[in-house]
Amino acid sequence: MTSIDDYAASFGEEPGYLNFAYVGPPGRAVKDEEYAHTELLGRARFGTIDGLLDQDARARSAIAAVSGIPESRVAFEPNTSIGLMHAMFGISGGVAVSPADFPAITYAAVRASEALGTITPIWLETDHGRVTPGNLKRQLTKSVAAVAVSLVDFRTGYLADLEGIRQVIGERLLIVDAIQGFGVVDAPYEVADIVVAGGQKWVRAGWGTGLLALSERAAETLVPVFSGFSATDTDELPVDEVRPPTAGVRAFQVSHPDYIAQARFAAALEEIASVGVPAINTAIGERVSRIIELADEFAIPVVSPRETAERAGIVVLEPLPDQLTVLTASLFNHGVTTTMRDGRVRLAPHVSTDEETFDMLRASFVSFASAINL
Image (cartoon, rainbow, N blue to C red; front, top):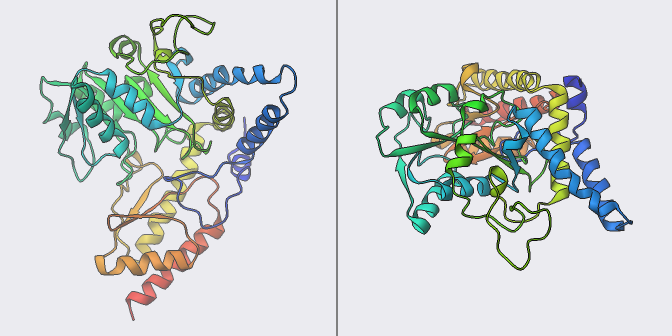
């Protein structure tokens, strides 16, 4: 096992970075993996390129170790959006989804509806952007065949109650976009039928990394609309005839993967597994609490959840409209990297968020408070 301190020390982002909900800077293990495999590919030494193919099994094993989902039900995907497209294009019936959810979900639902006409997006009314078992239950009808939800909402930072949602929706398919919590939230993925995630945020594996996981029921139900030549039951190149897709999650692949991206993803996940998601979650939770305390100290409204059970790694601030520019300018002037959207400021720390970053955040809040009180 790796200690949380050793894990944190393996990263090297500059102080002031609080934008892991956008992208997580990779650490030493991922960068070393990228360099080593790129060197192998670049030299093309006899026998080495074929070894890259082993990264697929390695990545699936690493995904299983972190998620608890059997590796036989997991496929590597280059990003979350493609996994969601596979899901939405393969479903028939109504799909309940929040119109305020991340566009990867809403676009996949609408594009599948427009192209095939086999699904119908059913737009949910939410509790200020939060999909909860209570508000979902009131809106379920017989036409709803599936429910799509983010594990952690990108706008509000709300951590969905997957077990509660499963109890409410019964036998309907549950689709979970886990990108804003995968690797840092100890989520009950076993209650979901379809799990998709990318590795560029909290996993810190870089772009081009992701996964699609299907329950046995989902694998039997979904139609592999986009299924390429690499997703058949032959080990050879399937030339001269078009073979049917294989059974299971592997049918939802279009071509050969980026093996170096798989190596990066595997390396990042192997580190996470060696530390343990609960330990990472606790460390991030402590930093989230510190950010909330700092915001309270300077009377900056926090609109993301305060309860530990309802939050992950995102803190959302919503200053008064005429104070937003002052706050964002103060953060910028002190070198604090965040995301500003829809009148709100989103801050997202990780285990490597250090004391210097908190000093910079405090200094930016001091400047903000001084400016608005002139």
